[in-house]
Length: 140
Image (cartoon, rainbow, N blue to C red; front, side, top):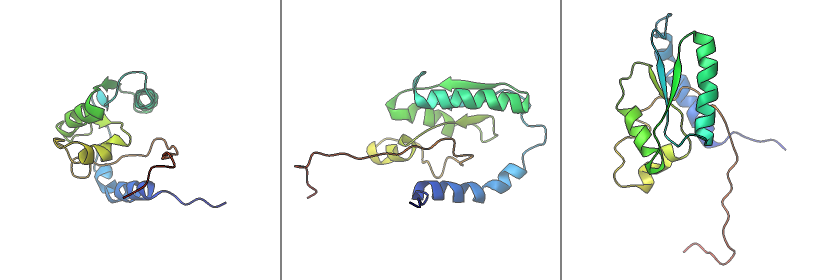
C-alpha cells in the first residue's frame, strides 16, 4: 500500500523550503549565546520530551546551551504568545503540535497567527490521528 504525505506535512515542507534563504543568512558562528526552546505544555508530556531530546542534540552539535522553557496553559497559547513576541533573532525556538494551528479557530482571543508570526524550521515527529464517533452521531 502506497502512502502519500498528509497535506499538513506537504505544506510544512513547502513553507520550510520557502524560508530556507533566511537560514543561509545566519552567521556562521551561531549561536553565540544560550538558545531558549519554548515548550508550551507541561513538563513530562510529549512536547516536553521532544524539546528536551532536541535541546541535548543541538547543544552537542553547536557547542552552546539550548534550554527548554515550559510555559503551559490555555492549550499552548501562553507559550506561543511568548514565542511570537520574542525577537526574531534565532535565539527563541518553539516546539508545538496540533493546537498551534487549531487554537485560532477554537478561541476568540488568540493574539498570534501561526502563519504570520512563525517560520517553520523542521518537522520533528509524526503521528497518526483518528476521529471516532458513536454511530448515532450524524452531521446535520
